[in-house]
Image 1 (cartoon, one colour):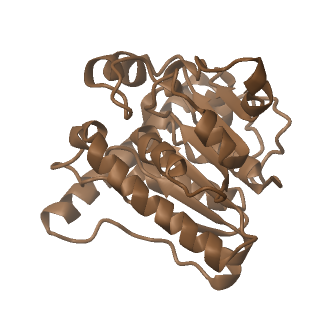
Image 2: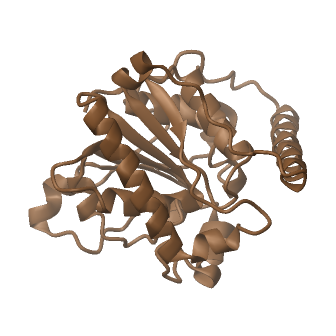
Length: 291
């Protein structure tokens, strides 16, 4: 019932993100990956320094009324609250020429006070989700025809899903994209699919077993189940019957493949789930598609 997208997907390739040459040597690929991860760690250390100096780490992209009228994409970071991963997502959306404005919804407590508490405090996360639902309602009121999408990374999947569930009757968004989401695989998606015109796009990787397989079995998922996450092996809807088949046709899943290492800088591990090129090549075109 859900559609699994392979690398040769029907989604158009984002401008400026054509696949690289297959002639790249393994050494060159590994060196590039090492550079990307070093950059991520240096950015994270920079964020920590800002935090220790009590500087603001919650940056926000500038938007215009014209952009907001064309559409709004809201990024939800993972349990790290801020840092390089959310920057990669934003850059990937811009690289893919996202249609409309981009905002970041900072729901988590900054490291070091946050991190695991951001995963475990469901009551607080649902309260933050209510704020996000209000933000969506305000945008829908101010720009009635403007498409709204959420892009949630890792633990940000929890507040994103909770927010959609809390939307008033008659208020919908266009779509939800999950990157290595930390929601349980059997989560009841029916309320979310009913409130999204386009549906859900879930990017997952069987190689992400340490964080989203073993990790969420030990520390729990965002919905507080001690089980595997949808970002590890995809959603396996436990509440689907024949009456729901049309609804679950709106669930699309991107499974990691080895080709994505060279094509998208996505190695299948949790550290590259928000790969800039993955977002540009798969997520942005899906958002730009008409509902």
